[in-house]
Image (tube, rainbow, N blue to C red; front, top):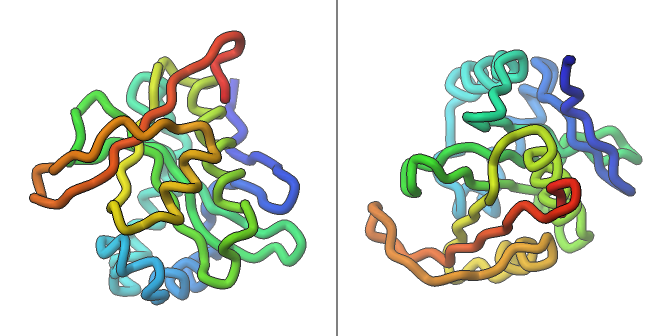
Length: 182
């Protein structure tokens, strides 16, 4: 069985990235509202092109025991790439943990789009993997991201200092029965 990585919500769609997303993705990674919180996304065009090819190649290798997935968030009304959402390992967390991570354009914030995307990706991961929980880390001053996670069903468990010496709020959500989704 081949998995479909496209998920439709009211106003946004999660879908696999495509090579044609390169310019729109690069434009998103120039928004300081994103890169101030996610500095690893400050890539050159060449670095981003290589990364995009890696992401596109990863869909055929989806492994339910080693979840790594990054999807495009597309606004349905104008078919515009407005962000990304994914679940994958984070070097700062326990190697067995998987973190949900996301970003959305400054032009599409405060409309519930990224909350819908987080709910959808977590539900997908619980349906198609063996994960029992998904984590999230948020810098304490990023109240908007904490709000997204709470609305998506995550619980704040603790504030913790990670290996990079920075403090983060640590959130988790667990597989729920029946069906293993949120």
